[in-house]
Image (cartoon, rainbow, N blue to C red; front, side, top):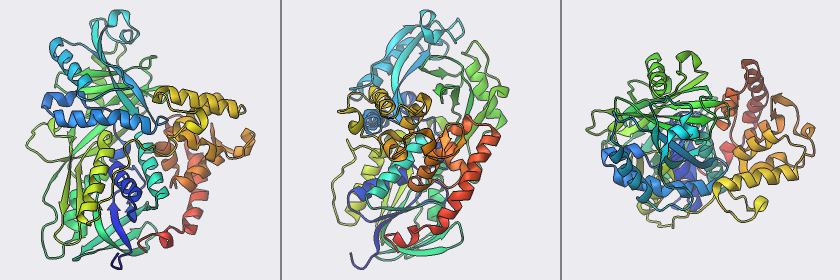
Length: 526
């Protein structure tokens, strides 16, 4: 090892950073990841939450990207059936948008660009006689149905972090890399924790997975060895905003709506009682940390959804909204919607190895991480085989509860039945939520509990101290916001007072835990 304390320092705790840390750790590299906020605080928890090929990208001839994403859909669905599941989408046909033959052609390509084992193919549908037509205006009598998948995006990030830790990586949240100095064979970095402490680490290679901050990291934080320019690419920051409204329809399908501006929006069943509508594409200037939905975006999403739904969607219906910043690689596209969603891995070996991650999307994160880990290994002169294709994410291996896997969607229902049978004292609604969040890890959370009272005080409806401790101790949760909006979406279901109760519990317990933390001394780069 030449005296180096660790192999790879990863900067950025979004889906790409955590995925890369997991893959590298699984190959035996000593890895340290740092994230300036909480995991998935920004782009990676602000997606449309789809595992999809990107049907609309076919119009921009992004066949390679669509095929790559389609190949990943079922790989991901099988890896974590508790947080990902198949979803059917309905596209009402509006003749003024795109002709039916073009949509049929697109659906045919979507069905056949990659092999499918679980997801059914596309078909036409008579909306005047189908349940999905009931919420729509009567002029939409014809449509098309196709398959993609749904994912709890923030939990996907955390599961990658948990797996990285299980394989030997050290991960630090609320820790900024404030300087990374490149030398001939080593990166020397200064890390600053949120309590003001600084830590100096050395790594053989550096991965820049800072998402919207990737370009700024190279232009300001990273210091080259001989004055060479580290930043050779530019990012185009595009804000995508979403609104959440009370449930617009009762069935389990989602909608994809074509808009007069040639964009599309989705309307998706969300958190049982709501509908998620998005997204927009708006150029962002300034700090991505301050991104938020504008009144214009809210009005746009309401207006486009109202073109299709019988009952108009009004700004006053919005119960929650969020905005994420997509770090897209700058190209010549004038329309933000046309900027490629594909990723680029840029290797720089003019000194200690540097790998910068440009662009990407949630659906292709595993493949991106695999490619990145292979590239890092090549730069370090140590080829180590890939392993994540076919591997489960934490909680995704359900066989101890249900026996051999069958289908991702039915396996979850079998898990719910098995947990309910083993713990009949758990309310059904709580069994379903805990199975969704934790999969096979639910046994670790419940432990030896034999009654609800064994889970501790009910801090908010259906949320007991045992779960909060579990999130604190195993998933890096430190604040009420971490729990309510990233580890779960319970914030949508709680009153302001109930949200405050969760925050108060976390303040009283997580702060004490952070003082006692031993992460610093246990780091492989210490």
